[in-house]
Length: 346
Image (tube, rainbow, N blue to C red; front, side, top):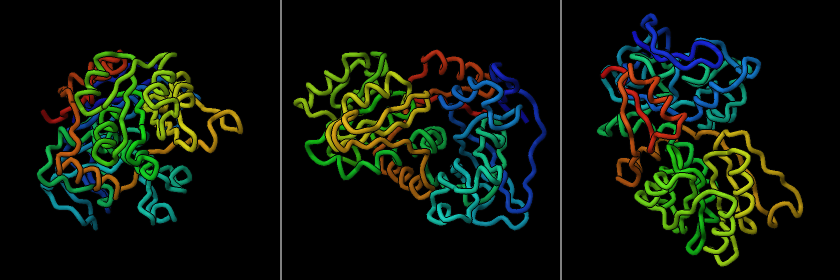
């Protein structure tokens, strides 16, 4: 089968031919209909050899959707031919966090060498994906897998982040979204669907800000050194009750800290290497800083239900398998509007 692999440190990903996988006991083989392209992959491919926690080559793609092609011995819970989405943050299934449905916070994944598809295990940008357990699949029903597949990360991750701040996002509050690309433009829709907050979007590109307005941002602000003052002006000097940074780079994290309100939340979602100092007098009183990771399986079901209700819709650009390297190149250059989706089987 064809697969898109990151094969050596610093090299661009390339389409190669690898053996077709076969499901072992308890495993499920999925014929991939659609696979999302994420900026996290760009970050991983920028790491030096000593920082890479897994071996190469690696088949990329941690957002996957398709149809069940075969079941390994003892596998149950899904049927051959069923349309499914892949829940990406695999865990042990046994520890206390996994028992709570929070496999994204599995306490034993590192110890046991369990890694998500595309981020250590073979990923979804391939004609077939081997899933370790049926519990990591969620039925799609009548949802379009191409438009839905980004929700497995670009929807689930902001949904998980926003849920923690819901008590603060009451009528009259302000929520700021920094970075309105793949995750950010979904976060804006989620904030509009789930809260009464006034939503302000920040980005460096007018094209991205136009998309932010299109999907529901009340206000848009260019993300530069003047952005904190602009947000404080919009909030009567109070600042934002919740700031969600989907870039996570040092400049954007600093911006987030400069615009948060007293008792507000700064949530650093992006993995751009930024860190925000916390201490008395450093941030407004009782401001909280969080760095969440992905989301739970039950939250993915909730996100898909929001999509089914028409509350969230991902802007996608589609690419064939042979065009997959181009999709990553365009993503790296900041030329993707919304989310790029690869169609491995045409």
